[in-house]
Image 1 (cartoon, one colour):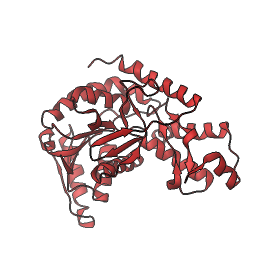
Image 2: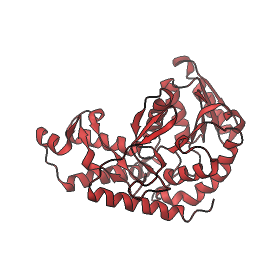
Image 3: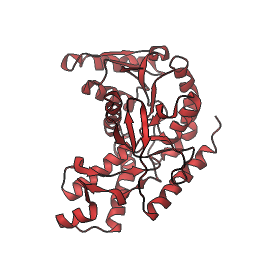
Image 4: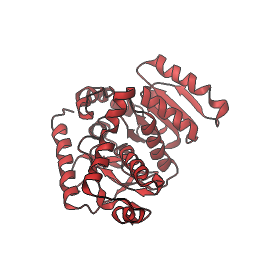
Length: 313
């Protein structure tokens, strides 16, 4: 598995921005772009290559599925985009049909790689990718709630006037309307959030926490309504996941992967804190949720299971 080479399927806003972000961070020596619209892939490639004199050497080119043969990581962003007023789950039928074409095209040429799903609804499409590819469970996972967790760190940091990098918090479950904020585990550099708020002179209660959770959950809808699509934040999240894989960091990230017997999540892909390294998802971390969080997570799992049961693979 060649982790110096990455393939990106789909050259829309998200795919192109991911390619630019990966180039800027010099994670890979080779980046291949694949898109149904070959001119789009070639145009993005030309634009990116013109920036190489201002970055570090990297080979960037447009290719087809056969060009992915020795890629260590394949990032899948292709599919219909989320429109204003549309939920991620509304995209299911359109994007499952697209994935039924994409995944066999990948596996025809690739037998050993990490498949990182970014397309929405990411949890459902991660499950679909796993079923269609036949790859090992730890080598197929989605961006999950990594971005949501980052958004939560940001809003908490803004509210408490503290560096968001010192905020340790997770959003788990579906990347979508049923996502769950694990408030019981939120801390700022080891200090529980309620205690930290008291130290800083801020009031904290369930209502204020709920407002922050809703702010995170609805932020994508707001961004889509204002500018049509979200792509900068997810590109940074995907770069972070790739860093952990390439450098074998074993960082804990809330990627979406197949779950077994965790709060009734069995046979479904959801975002959970996971150790991510060179071999993909090495371990899922089981949070000690409080009663309400456990109930909400079960509800999130149930919503995803309802969708999965309606899909024909």
